[in-house]
Length: 421
Image (cartoon, rainbow, N blue to C red):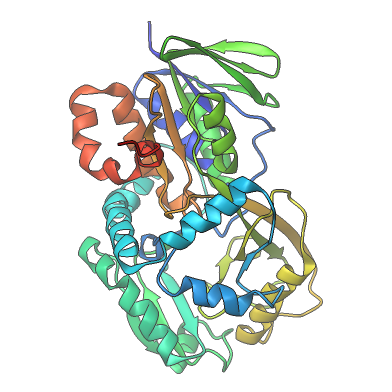
């Protein structure tokens, strides 16, 4: 009988993991608290951008955060919420805002991203249907100094084939005439891609069903039953679901679910905002990063998607109009044809953040058969295929686990274990 793996979470990470396991012959059940059509997996820019995969805690972030605190529409905001776990998380994140930790995290993410494009190509070859575009990515900047900072930060990614080529403002507009005169300098990143995250989630779900994956929706996990150090079932939606292996892939709820499984993980939400414009007023072919505003613009077949901001201390899905307004103002600065009164379908998404800016991938400490795939921050779409590869290899064990051990080590949940003498 095939080993039965229960994957908790039907977002892009959970679905990628379920797909990878089912392709290897495992019996898989995916459990989700909702209908699988909401959350950060569909509310994001849809970028596949190894070149931008860097830890959020970075040198200089503290100064920027302080300068932005007085602006409700700033790219980064920390709400003063008196929750102990929120305060501990922010203090831990501040401790990682140093050169040593940032460079170590950047190197780890670079190694994790070596196979990103290859694995995504395999999805399409294997019949996972989704909207995907490969013209490269543009970055637009007001200032040459900002471009220099980004190019310096991305230089290490050249080792895995992801490059950034300098462009003048006129060269930017040759590629994308919709960009206005505010864009004075730019970068072209030819290997980066963008896709429709809604279609990716649907495509993975459909392919999983083809492979025999069972789905249990509208069933939040309420408890985990153990026999010794092994989980034997989860209570979801009032029903027990038995399994041989369990994978926690629930995004911003990873911390809560890990506590149910007996090991606390410091995963907190970083709220992002966005909207979809269907007016067609500003046409683009490339995905475009508006550098100073930290806004992502994604051209899809039926809409232009805008996404940005990072807000700590928010747990709900409500829309802060001030923060949404900041994205709109940035869009109008760089794209003069974008109408201020265009109809917009606004949304928010809770990105699963960790204090060191790295995802949590691996076996849960003290549990023999419980694995975690969470904390991917803004890079869930980019890192979903390789995360699934690592989890599948660790579940298989033996040589497969040995082959991924070096790449996976920086992301182990063990790094959050209490330090003891």
